[in-house]
Length: 413
Image 1 (tube, rainbow, N blue to C red):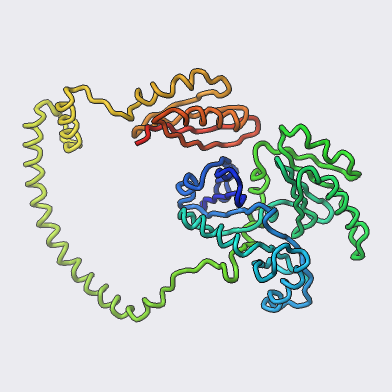
Image 2: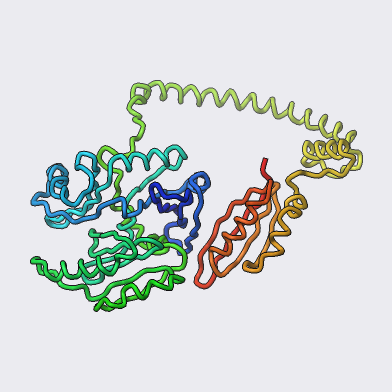
């Protein structure tokens, strides 16, 4: 089962925290959380990583090109989109999707920004497989437009490969303008039958923003972040990748191995013969090992006369030596009581989360929590992180009516 990690990236965002979603192919459970790139470095290991750049930094359009030749499309598209771009076409990277008749879906992004994004994740050893605009992962077609509202902006999807961004305050004006433009166009377009409207469920102003739109609005509140919608459209994300052309990931060439094939064959033959000889040596070493094992058991009985079993002898001797050095008490800076004594005041005063379980291992405590919202768990994490000498790592799972979290506490240093 292939595991995946999706990271929502806002370039230059004042917060260094990025929302992420983690799951596996053909598995319904999705874990949602947010953290720094340093934390994502550990999470990303062994997973297919997709990065969704905020749509405000990209342009998504369908461009009509009277040619099915890919190279000719690449030559014509920059000039066809020139009037829609704030940057010069020489400074813009164009990524092409799968053409439909003479219409080609295109994502345009500032070349310098794309390179900076790739370099940033590369520095953290996060290997990106797919990098695209988050508007690709938003549903929407000509008969059912889609609007996604967040804290300060809005994303409007008017077709499979057409998206528009605006400030939250201007959503109604821009949406009305797009509806009027669509109604007055000459290409037989009609008004959409419905508009699917995604907004955060605790956003008290969201519903009022579209109350004057004379089209059927299907409200779809989400719980914590738009990634809850994006993860439902992974196939669209993976099929439209900005990492093409000059930004195609470079793979190390293996052509230098070809001259060594004959050498490898000879070496393999020699290895087979050598293994036979090693088998003889192994039998001799086995005899010597039996003799040494008896000697070790003799010395172990002398060191620990009350021992009944001859298992884990090295660890048991080391443990006995530590007990002798510490007078038999033995304690650790990062022990369970040490951590618990530091965090228990914060845990006992917290009434917005429920502690379901706590497990101590290898000098850290894993605490399983439940709460009504992600903010409640985040507040507890921040309170614990402020305690001197305590390091916290949080992962969460969003369910229908609650949020589950696992909080790892360990001693710094």
